[in-house]
Length: 467
Image 1 (cartoon, rainbow, N blue to C red):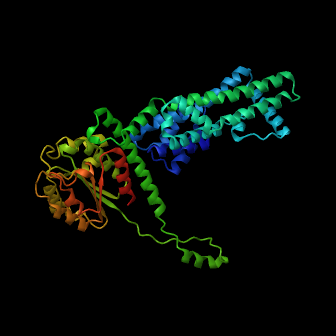
Image 2: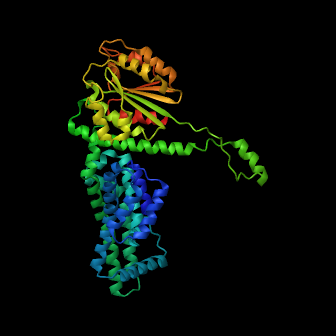
């Protein structure tokens, strides 16, 4: 069970829920205390130990249901069905399994790992094998997960079901040639037949679940990953918001891991060799550079004008998430005027914070864009918060309505900052045409990236966190 909980913790992390090693150990201990007999008790124990944020509760519930009521439950039900057909108690069934294993061992028949897992009812290993095969199929043949039939064929191929069929014939021959009484031989043969047939049923039911509603929702998001935010319907935008939430959480996990691994500094070979002299040259004591702790800061300037309103919501959602990645985050929104929304982001949940930023209560969001004026206001009032530890991120299309560009103010920000990123929700081919001042602004930035769909959003934000 411990291994299953570790796998479940890994599944949570893959889906954006932060679960540390200490919390995983707490979950193991909690399950030991409450026992595994009652599903609701296990659920409560894991949720108490593994979920820290209310926003993660819904994802946890979905993943718990999938992991503990999905493939594992299918395999368990298949085993119970065989036991009922044979009309044996658990003890009698185990005795039958032991006799079969002894028979095959005496004959010297080498079985594949999959055959051993099936016949010994090693549910945990069997589940792990099928899940790993499913991951491989999604990675190598992403289109094959669109239908249950094709996905099941790929699963059968991945675990080599044909080779298993040849093993079944050998095992049944061994049973038939054994010296057991006719009733025992009949029960053994029936058990082998049903266990091998059960695998096909397990794969069929698992494939049907994997290509069900939840899987279709995920693929729908993937299908929207290249579509511009500007042309999405409200329903499509809702699906993308869900994906952006998961993206933000995964980035937090990645950044936390990178910082944890970097705390001790780089390996120092010279110091290690010197220290090893006292042990005859054996490097028992590894030495690392003393790395000065850096406290990165970020300042975000987000355009919330009408032309980029749909994109601004996603950008602000990520700005909200960046609060946990950096030592200090200062968040500003602008159209023609500029206003700070840092307090709103700290004091409210993400939905409320974004609504306050976009509903016009902080500044006039219906004015005509004036990037130059906004940059000037920032330099005049907030330039002091920018230093060589500060990363400045500008989110906007750079369309200035033919006002003075004010690129010198952006240049002043660049001189004070560690680096300046600009993420633009318009296609690169449109930059510099009409009222776009992107060609001027790009000269004052370290990184300028197009960011108009989900795939580009993944790339640019991952680049931001990595630097």
